[in-house]
Amino acid sequence: MDKMWSGRFSASASNLLDEFNASIMYDRKLYKEDIEGSLAHAAMLTKQEILTTEELRQITDGLNQVLSEIESGEFEWKIGDEDLHMGIEKRLTAIIGEAGKKLHTARSRNDQVAVDFRRWVLKRNLDIVGALKLLMKEILVVAEKHTETLIPGMTHLQHAQPTNFGFHLGAYLAMFKRDIARFEDSYKRNNVSPLGCAALAGTPHNVDRDMTAQLLGFDSVSVNCLDTVSDRDFALEILFNIATMMMHISRLSEELVMWSSYEFGFIELSDEYSTGSSIMPQKKNPDVPELLRGKTGRVYGSLMGLLTVMKGLPLAYNKDTQEDKEGVFDSVQTAQISLEILKEAIKTMEVKAHNMESACAVGHLAATDLADYLVEKCDIPFREAHFITGKAVAKSEELKIDLSDIEFKYLNDIDSRISEDVLEFLVLKNSMNARTSAGGTATVRTKEQLEQFKTFLEG
Image (cartoon, rainbow, N blue to C red; front, side, top):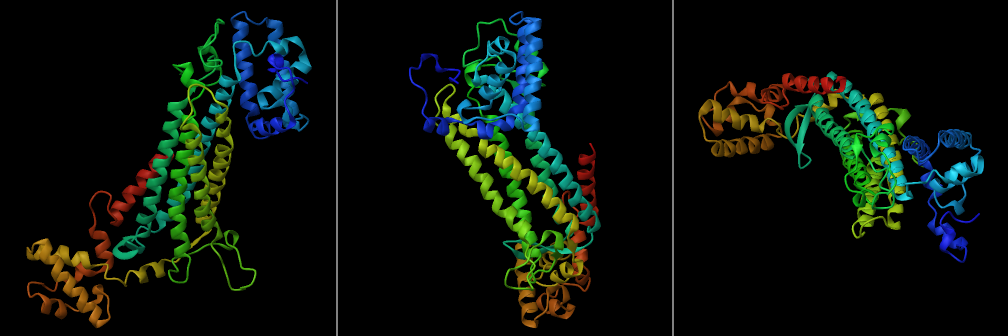
């Protein structure tokens, strides 16, 4: 069958062009959005007396039949149809005849695909928000059990100060909460209807864009049609949001990999979410967090790919924009399965609290507390207190002990202004609980933070 646009051509398109030009084998994922958009468009055309009530009935029945055929697997997707829009319209016309040819009145594939793809992306924003909240709930369950479990807080991957494991997990809750805000903001910002913009400059037909916007669940209509038909900011935003979310997932995954090693021994991933080796029988590999790290690069590639596609496009629509979908489809699928499997891995992992607390007895985590003691109790300027504490750390190294275990006599020898009450400041749990400033690691503050996250998730 001739192409819908074949009127001005004297030769048929080559098979090679069909294969190169077609998007139907992947954009058919948008079939629901396309049919819903056509139903809304037909209803509006009828209200505006461009279609008759009988033509609307035929179109509605025909589109519902097409939908049924697609969902049953009966529908035949053909490369020669180029894209899902033409494939569906051809089938509709074959079913109902002349009325099907009128559906495209006051519409272009440019605004049609913009509607379909935008609505699909908007829905996926909300789907990912839901999945993020489920992940946060599982992290919160673990965090609430460990607000008093000591774990070394690190900078430069070196032991720094004692924190608690609930506080540590709370950092990831904060990251994922920001991710949710980004997805929700993108949904609000991009929930505007392109339908009625036609090819690029609007249409002379007396259309009602507000009506189709309302029928399709949009908040409003777009302002400038020239921008609208070539706008893919909504796709770039979901890719950026996914890339940022996956970066957060990758950071957590890196720690899960380290924590599950014998060198750390802070957690053990369940057998259900671990794999073995083909040659080494003893191995239990953290493949889930490793793959999550790897898939982060995959979604980064999709973001950079679409940014590169869009960077040099003159107004308005260009065929380059057809390259907008596959990376988004893949990244959304990657995000959804990543959130699900990370949730399950955390839900089923074992936390080895004893090993976390034992690790705190290495690396002189109470050093800052000694310096703070010298400032608070001895009225010593912080820079001098820093130097004195360095001497105490060096003495502890000489004695092959942690600063938290040093005897008072050695500290007094270093500086006679130090009193025996200093030892209470060097107890690791006291050190952790001393950090009571807003956002700090003290158990009381950690519980407040976790309560805020719980309130957010229940809201």
